[in-house]
Image 1: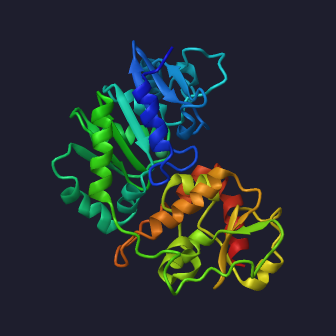
Image 2: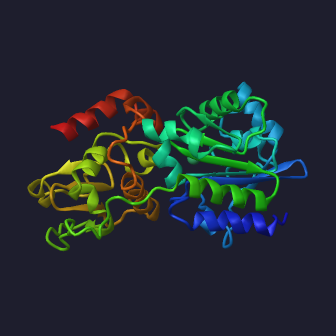
Image 3: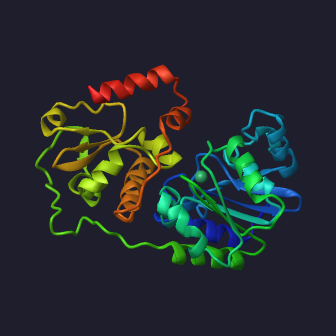
Length: 335
Ligand SMILES: [Zn+2]
């Protein structure tokens, strides 16, 4: 089946913009002749031109997963169950919308609003005139789809803001989707308040070289700006951070860092007090993208906004860790 070129093009285009999609995050779908083509789990939208990243499901069967049929992964809805690709974990909410096109992505501009009390409150003014709803945080998969279903009801919506997660844009034509994406991005755009170019932020390249770690100068403000440091280390704010970087970013002293063996450290990135931000040399591009996303989000949060982390329970749920293992990691970190 040849998918509409404009659908593949727009999927690739948002996938290539780190302010909209980071790593394998986000997913798009199109309904064609009774089937729904959705991005496969683990693939990246940016690869839409180079690889087969879409897989066909029966949308009616995907919806049955909400009633307990299947294991929640929508494998039972695959048109070709023997194929290599598996549908995205977020397939059920794509199937839920009657509209032909569903674009879901982790827009930095939306996340900035959706993780802060004041940001959430400002959405009514900023999105006025659009048909939109917001949905409280739920774990991606069946729980999130149920929450979206409850918030949307029977009214046709254009935009769904997912608190502590991202945004969904739905419509019938690619033109409509493209316009909605631009509209939401413009209305929710906030300037970068702190950046690596600030005069008081000087990444100290090469000063602390520890084998197996690489400095990431573009995100140095995460350790040099006290407000960003506080926010980055006191919680996580959206699921992909947890999935790719683990719980809140850890901080160590330069002395501790000089002895830090990356092979034994449980998460891919570490903040070194007063120095710089490091990532493991063997980190994946998704992990690197996710670290930049932390900077992109936190550098846009106004100083007087109050952030709402997803909380330790939600983190443990995302990591599929039992509570005990999670508690041990936190204790180790605090010790
Ligand atoms: Zn998502």
